[in-house]
Image (cartoon, rainbow, N blue to C red; front, side):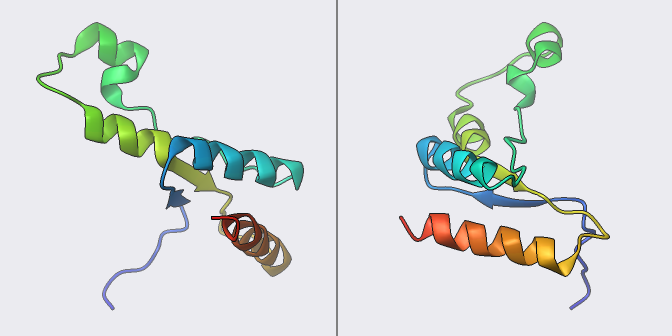
Length: 95
């Protein structure tokens, strides 16, 4: 009750990266720009150059490969929101 979404981003965490890629491709066909969003620091060029990793980063790698960022902005029209929601529901019905 004391929190509000800041409309900065909305994402989905999919079960596998294959499903994420399938959902992203289906949305792209509908001209919905859902993108891969998160590159772990340890995998980024700067992270590889300036940081060290201790142990496995398997959880970070798994989560980052399954995140899908959906379109969202503060003046997004209702018709666009409805299109995105319907498309996501339709493609996720396959799973």
